[in-house]
Figure: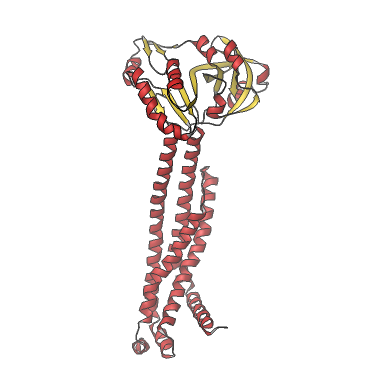
Length: 430
């Protein structure tokens, strides 16, 4: 064996032997590194999982879509709350959709949606639902899985057929024992034949009056042809109460504009705002651009990771300071040993290497244990809270790399201090 290699291995064995002589002290010294590495990996995994879930929900809205929603103006909302009657006219119109389709470059399709809140009945079963009047290509733009039967067709729209499609959850509540495709349901005073069952892929319809995006799962939709919705329910919706009634005239509750690609979204967004601004004197609509929301979510994720990583890195810093403190105390405690080694011919680099090996073993050993705990902790969190967590390779490598660096950086000064001791003075030390 090479003499240098033999000398290095001897120094490593000596360092390990010194650590094993003080097992409790070594274990306590490692705790700072263990918890530091564990917290870095676990916190980044939780942050990554939360960010991933938010981004996936936004992606489902369609990165090449622009969503317009009718919004009741604040002044009309105040009047409606007084219950004085009258008709409030606001929101998006069929004409808005036609203008966007014909004048905005890069538009592939415009999907109109009307939303009526009613009760759907089958026999004795009555369930509150949302009746969505829309066009046959709704599943392609918004995201629906046809589980059984079919979705609406062009023939249904053209002939104004009384057919409907139910979400799976609603069908299970209405038809606990029967096959929905063999029956009809009643909405308001009309019967609709069930032709299909669908499962939601997308976020639910969000309450436009709040102006915020909610993540509450909603599985109580009834889909009917847009022409049927317009004819059966009309454009004036009346809500009665003990103090009077409230009437709202809304042609369309939502328009989803599908662009040819994401590049067209960037240019179409301001153009649509300008176009609608010409024909809407009041702020009675809102525009949601999922692509912009996605980018904001990605930016938030980066900031979130930096903040979480910085907080967790403080634990590693504290662990490193703990290692330095213990090693400095060890140098004082082993001054005579250092003098003996120097008197027997050990060089300064041998003393430096011995103490450096001890600190690196503490930090790397603590880092390995911390990595194991850091990987297990997010799994436990996911099992207990149903929160999605994602352990990334880069976070493991980062945490372990920092733990090794901490051993070198914080161990170098005590090692140098030990090597600089005068051999004669060290031998005199009691």
